[in-house]
Length: 68
Image 1 (cartoon, helix red, strand yellow):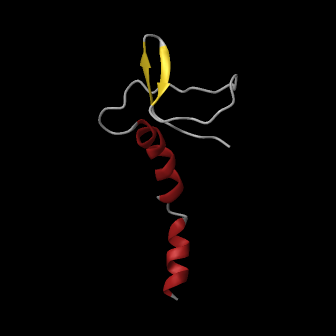
Image 2 (cartoon, one colour):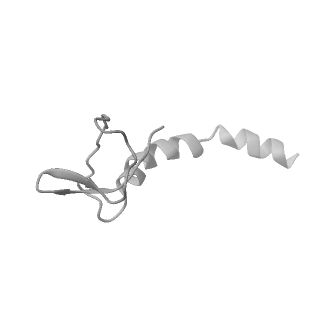
């Protein structure tokens, strides 16, 4: 099961902020978010997709049906 944790890089090594109970030698996938100041990264990149999903004229049909 995927687990997401914050970590820091110190002397070239990735150190998680919390203990991870993983067997020795477990392979992990690391995504480096180097710009975490201001608006969080995932909010910025998902905003366009969310707007397309939730804010379009086809949804008006459902609102009209609910009013009947």
